[in-house]
Image (cartoon, rainbow, N blue to C red; front, side, top):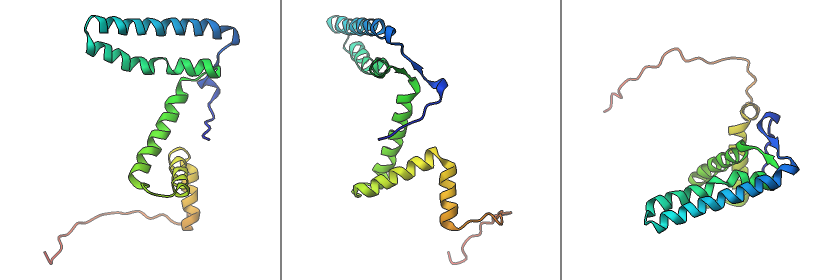
Amino acid sequence: MVGIELPAEDFEILKEEDKEPVRTRYEKSKKEVEELISTFYEKGYQKGASYLENLSKRLFTNIELWLSTGIIAPKTTSLLERVFREIGRRLKRIAWGWSDAAVTNLSKMILIKQYAKDKWEQFWKEKLGIKGYFNIQIQTVEINLCPTF
């Protein structure tokens, strides 16, 4: 299970007395969009109808979520989608064929690296024994051709 703590300013609670009017308006709007798509198909505008159909699949997603949870938080789904897309992108490249346990651990590492950078740095400082007693700075870099080529 993945949980995200949302700051209070990022969400609102949908009042119980507002749920039914919102649901009624949502259903009416969804039906109107479906009728518009049908009209485009009837008139022979296949590309326009297809565009509207694809758009309508995502158009009401947040409203459906708000009605089911009672929480209006538009950033929630996009944040979760971004997290899962990033994990999926990395795992496809690195962890194909790995065990579930290894993939789970890698997923945790990706989440910590991406969303808790201070914990990530602290982990590696402890793992590598870095105490912070000194600082290394590179003053210059010089590139020379290898004499054997």
